[in-house]
Length: 271
Figure 1 (tube, rainbow, N blue to C red):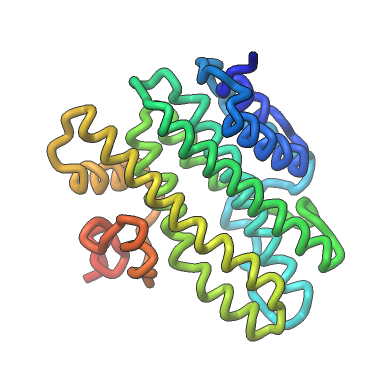
Figure 2 (tube, rainbow, N blue to C red):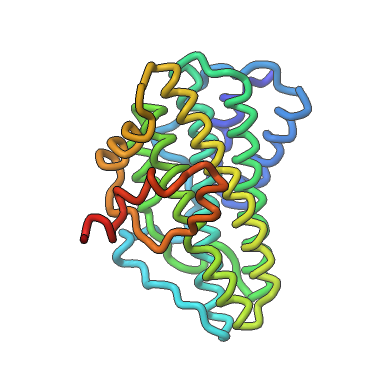
């Protein structure tokens, strides 16, 4: 019988974007159904496989997306979001495969990250469908390679990975997505706005999962002050500033109150 980490590694090694999303959802279904009996310890590749397109460039070389009523502007935005969700599939399965032997992790840890991986694959598929409606698909535009830097920076430590990926990167999505929804609605693209509404709601749960397991691991390791530990890990491993404006209501719902992130914020550091 297949082990979960073997399946996770297979998803990570799948290059085609649509096939990766489908494999992610199939693996999640098998895990939930009990068809996979063991977690295993297959490990993770250094980098996930990627399709031939899009071309990956440094973040500063990728044009900034601007939402307009014209299909080209909306397509660029949705393409950028699809790229984020494709990376998120790999980040979730890397969490499963890479850290299966990092500590004594309960089954609930894997249940949570399998659920995240399934959500991210669903998000990619919804965005891919909208790109198709607009006459193209994922891979038509260039994208940046900055997202996997966070995985490489935290590959050595589960606590650091939890601190950066769900509690910084996914939390940033909570901040920026409502404005995108408003702009898409104003542009008359109600179908894309509806997709982002689903993503925004489910990402709150992903941040909450990250915070829950961060606290659990802090307790397991005897970390007396999880908030201070999180701030220290962000200063050490996150490239850039924690930028406002913040969606305080969504962050608080996810278990990330202002006293966690405000001391690290751009506005605080700039006085």
